[in-house]
Each structure stands twice: as C-alpha cells, then as structure tokens.
Length: 246
Length: 355
Image 1 (cartoon, each protein chain N blue to C red):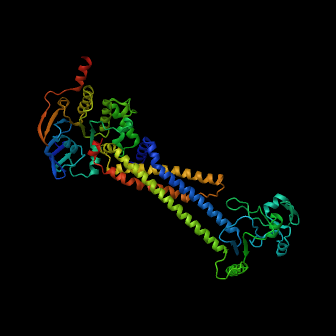
Image 2: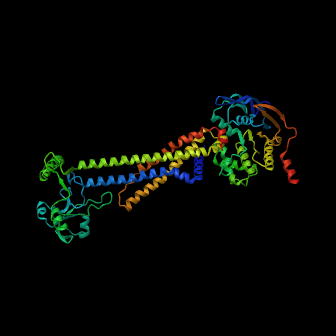
Image 3: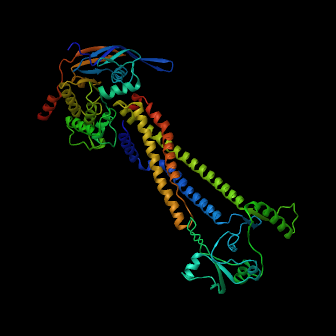
C-alpha cells in the first residue's frame, strides 16, 4: 500500500489574509499527512488556525503558499469551479449548525450533492434513501429539518456528506449544537463509518470529543503544536451501552 | 444541474414565498395584459376604419362643415357610392328635386319584406310614409366586424329631410360627391372648394369654413392616427415591461441576500458558480413567464369582454401574443442577470457563515 497517495498531504501551506494594510498570518506553514482510513481530530483555541486549515482541506479556499495534495492531486492552484467539483465528488461536509436547506425534506437535502454531479433523478432518490437508512433515518425521509431533532438533523447532514462516496469526511464542530448524549450518538456514527474505512477529519475544541478519534493534532498560532495518537480512545458504542444499563 | 432540476428548485423557491412571488410578477402581468388588450382594441379599430374605407366608393369626396365630423342623418345615394343595383333603377335628379317618394332597398331589407318575390314597384312604409321601391341594391354582406351593410334603405335626401324627418330647412350635415374618374378627383376638389367659398361669401384666399377631403387623404389621416396610437401603446407597453423587470430584479436581489446561506450550502456540496447563476436565472425567468402567462390570459379576457359587452371591435393577434411572451421572458433574463451573477460570485466560506 506504499504506492497509494495520502488522502490529505499539505506541504508547508500558508494562508495570509489582508485586512487593509494589516496582514494576518492564519497559517504559517503546516505540513500534515492524513492516510486513508485515519480518524484525525484537529484541536486548538479560536484563532489557532484550525478553521482556516479546515477550509483549505475542504477546498473552500486556496492556500497563499505551499502545496495541498488531495488524494494525490495538487488542488492548491485549482480554479473556483474546479474546487467546487472536488468538493462535490471527494469531500463530504458536516457542520456545527447542520446547514440543511429549510423547508426541504430530508431526502431532498441528501439528494443535493448529487444534483451537481449529473446523477439521474431515479439514482439520486435511491442513493439518498440508502444513505438515510445508513444513519438510521430510513423512516424520516419526508421530514423537513424543522420536524427533526438536532441529532436527527445532524444525521441527515452526515447522510448528505456520504452520498457522493467521498474520500474524506470533514466535520467542523459537529457536536457543538448538540447535548452530550446526542453528541456521543453522532460520534458513534463517525466511528462506525471510520471502521468501514472512511477517512475522517474532525475539528473540535472539546477534548472528550477529540478522544473519539485515533490521532489528535493541536494547532496554535498557525502552526502544529502537537501531533500524537489518542492514548485511551473513547468508544461511543460502549459509552452508550453503559449509559443504557447504568 | 439540468433544466428540470433547476425548474423544480425554482418553483419550490417561488412557492415558499407565494405573495412575494406574485407581487414580483405583477408588473409583468399588467404589462403583458395591457399589451394584449390594447393591441387587440387597436387592431379592431384599424380593421373597422379599413372596412369603412373599403365600402366607400373610389372617386369619393367628402364635404364636411368646419372641422367637426357629423355622422348619421345623411343618406348616401347609390350612384355616388358606386353601389351597383341588383334590380330596378336608381333615382336621379328629378326625384331629388321633387322629393319623390321612392327608395332603394338593401338585400337584407328585401329578404325580410318580400322574400323571393320581386320588390321593384312595390310600396314600403318608412315611418308611415309610403315609398315606392324603384331598385334593389346588390348584396355587400357583413363588414368584417359584424355590421350588416345590406340592412339599409336609400332615398333622395330631399325626401328624407322634408317628408320623413319633416325639417323645413334643406341644410345637410355632409355631402358625398363622386368625381367622374379617379384622375379628376383633385380638379373636382378644387372646383368644389371654389364654388362653396363663393356660396358662403368667402374670398378665394381665406381659410374655408368647410373641408373637402378625398379618400386618399382620409386613408392617410386614418393611417397616421393608427401609427400614433400604435407608437403610444408600444411605449406604454415597453415602460410597463421595464417596470415589471425592475420589480423582478428587486425581489431577486432580496432573495439572493436572504438565501446567502443556502447558496453557501449548495457551493459546499459542489455547486459551481454557473450552477448557482443558472438556478437564480431560472427563477427570474419562471417568475416572468408565469407573470406573462397570467397577463396573456387576462389581456385576452379583457379584449373578449370589450368585444362582447362594450360592442367594441377587438382583434387578437397571435404574433403579438407570442412576441409579448418572448419579451416577458427576455425581461426575466435581464432582470435576473445581475442578482444571479452576484449569487454566483459569493465566497462559499462567507456565505456559510451568513446569519
């Protein structure tokens, strides 16, 4: 497997924002490799550069300097439209605020990424139903976000992120708007997906959430402060079972 | 994103804000309805004028008092209007001088009163005055806007004025004169003007207190009038279309701002700039097209109502209807272009953060 490229390979990426005369160095040279099948948590205080890093890895933005190889392709000089294509095909997003289209059924929300990849209506419906079933919402396909709980909405968002079979799942504070019980339920889904081989990058500021990952990277002032594997990994399924019995 | 998906998305977005969508399209509805109805009315009027022109004789001159048109009381003589007879003979100068109780009748009158039996030589009563039918006019049929031109009785004007109307004066509202040939029309016009000025005790140089108009002049006048009306209607229509387009552009701009987050979500899951642009352009065009369709329906209804209730001739013109719909669609594209462009240029990160 040595010939296989890393899913994420950043080579000294920098990001500088210009605010008038002031230049803000959000990232000052970050080199990080995420191999296929990893579950990486990125931590750091606000202003540490973790959000900027996530935006770059998510192909929502381009680095000022350095190279970023996604699945072996250097996307750091891609055009806006090319980046949109990469986002649609290779990356799945899960956000803190769920970011579902309001007054739109769960099924249609999950169909959305396929709309921009030219997937036929029939195929869209089939794959969206499957993805919803996979996150345990097979019986709620017609519900709109307003008719779903926070945890259910986040599961719809996860189904949407999975539906184009991405190489990387990006989760930005996915439990930020959820209570602790629901947070663990969502982490259980992530761990299950990771066990099935999906590469996950999780951004969080909560250390107990980060401990569900296999590896934790801490950012500070635009550089990587530490990068180490999780010693005592939390297993969400076991926590849930303990709570159910205890 | 294909056209069906874009249409579905557009219709859903517009349905979510029914009242606002309706108000946005209202300008286009009114513009299209106004164009369809006014053009129908204008075309109807034009057809009516052309019809009247066609039923007048070719070498005709019309003499009118002052500049005021008078309609109604006068009866035209068959010979003047170049109306051939189907049967019998026309009355002439002698009958005119004597105010003879004779008349010519149209086909419809003949059919009603006499059926298949001959009418010439029979007596009919016109307001209790017995008149001898001396001739039957050949059939002209209906005018194109539905008036029966054969439902007519012609008699010497002296007979009409003295015996039927019972007036002591010989004054007439208007005269219709037929020149001997088309070539002599302008000469006749000059001679009549000169003669009437003499009779009215006016000098040759003064402005006459009457008008002598020939058919070509009248046709020109009518055409000029039609052109002016068409130009006026056209500009009103264009202005209302522009106002309608501004209404749509305004609502689309508000919609783009309101849905910034939605645009961010779409971009995050793979929508390219042109996908977003296409989506909002589709929405604007759907708004304009739905507005146009409602306007078409409304305008047609108004034209039909005018024709039936107000007895006003209207003529619906399919090319104008199609043209107006195309214009409405174009208005939608133009109105939607800037808002759609703005949406497509949003930065996905900023758009996702938008509250």
